[in-house]
Length: 153
Image (tube, rainbow, N blue to C red; front, top):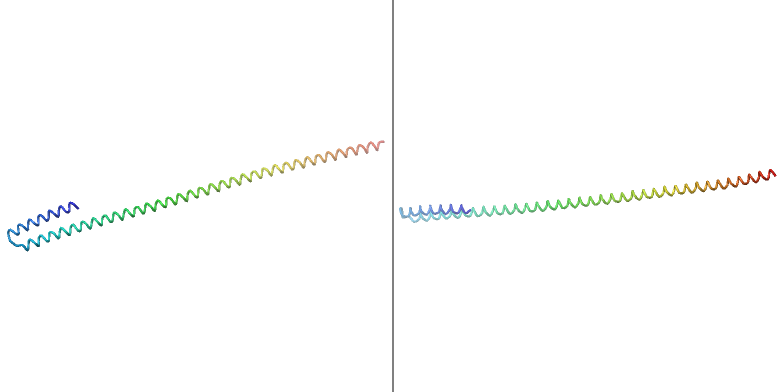
């Protein structure tokens, strides 16, 4: 922009030097005014165009920066949501695994206790049956011996 203003200043100097020549040569003040007004209009138009272009460029840059910031914020929100979902899924999986392990351990303990109780009951029944058979057999032997002794007598 500075270079543009410098160039316009040089153009204005050239046009005013031409007007000086025209004034001295022709003594015509209307041509001088027209040339000066034309030079001023050209300078004003170019400066206005440069200012408008600079403002438009700045607005475009601001819009691009705002859009980029919005995109970055959206991406960060999505990443945070994904991380939260992954953490929740991992926690749920860990809880399910722990519950399954606890249930399996409880089932194994119950099965072991039931097997031990069944074995103890079977052993007690067998011992009781053996004791009853032995006691009954002993009594039968005593009765047979008594009958045999009584029969012999």
